[in-house]
Length: 298
Image (cartoon, rainbow, N blue to C red):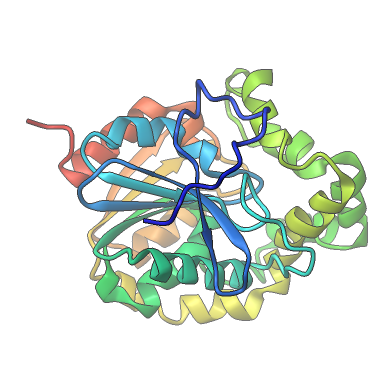
């Protein structure tokens, strides 16, 4: 097991809400990825999206770690991971780094849990090395080209261009506008919770270099998304659970319907919440996962 980092997490980390031992793994590039590794048993790999970090999985990890090994990395640039100045921060770049992370830790026979951009970043693990993945848990995400989606194209014109980059850098648009708007129950995003997502991005450079590329990638990484979609048949063989916040303005019901086509045998748990079911309805997410995985019983 890789050694613990000699440095404690920063003071802003809420150690009551996020009490996990922090670990860091150096990737072949020399960049260091932070992760938590809790529990023993079959491996669950949690892949977050933007603009969050492994903190979003804290309540799921605490519930499932008594029954399984829960591994939750922070993508490079996010959370407590390293933030290389020369990083591309595109979904394909993140996917490559995540694959190195999985290989270096020797993770195998894992259940892949993906949310938001964690879908196109994490699902290549199942497409490229299906023997290493046992099951899928999919939450409010995608893995297909967004070109032709008028709603996405309108949003991309705003956030994906030079104006969007300015909004991200100067006004913290992703965290202060988009994130709150994606909660169905706005009261769930308390100031204390919001602070844990705001703190990793205190300056204009980090927001422009790390967060904005994923806004630009909605259309800018179209070739990558298309390549994933062309291999979608490989996912049909996996036992799958789809947990969906049905009040999500970013990933509406037509996205869920597409997952029904890709994973026709999947269990579906529809929850009347927004983009982050694990934040708005953690107990229901935990119950659905325990039932699907056969954990926490007996």
